[in-house]
Image (cartoon, rainbow, N blue to C red):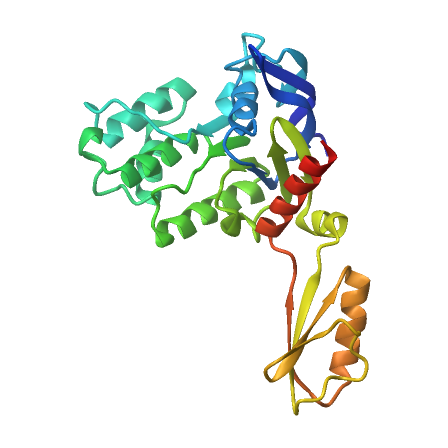
Length: 300
């Protein structure tokens, strides 16, 4: 499967600051990828490079097979973007704003009306954007990013200002795009939202890509403990539990380093009549993020 985005050995400097250092990765069609890192890690610089707003000092960038900074970018109509801080003409209505962006992309203006309904702005579509709240402007920004059913969608903190119901709608829309073969990249600090949705996680720190892979791959690389909690009949610890198992009120917690150890412990627990209930907690995306950042700091 050919990647829709390919970043190869990219470097970017802002005077004395190295914003990106030898960054390489690919994004595939039909996949949602999460770009995570603290402020200043290089996430926004990467997005600007993919949009063609700036050029790399070294390395190559291809989006839909083309160099976005080369001038004529035929794939631009197939690219959707939502910045972290959206800004629209306050003197236009929501409908007029969508009609303007539809003309830029060569889309049917009726798409804009339908998208406004989809993001919950149907009733406010004839109001001036200057009367919109921050959350409403964010929804308008999402609607314009979805015009033309983009093949590559770049989203910077997209759920800021959205209530839980609209966040759910937002991710339902993204699922439809992915199923249609679109590439979706989300730059976000909301790691808990992305944990069960992202097929690929890119972790940035100080301009360096410190981790790239599926959540299961990052868990295997990190070897962070998997916690298995058992609810037991009686106070005795199971004879088969490892020496470092921790006794808890009404049960115990066992920690293992990998999937092999997890399956071994689960088989033991399933065959033990004293075990009433089993709960498994894999390392979270928050924990993986902290782990890989610490590993890079220690190696520096």
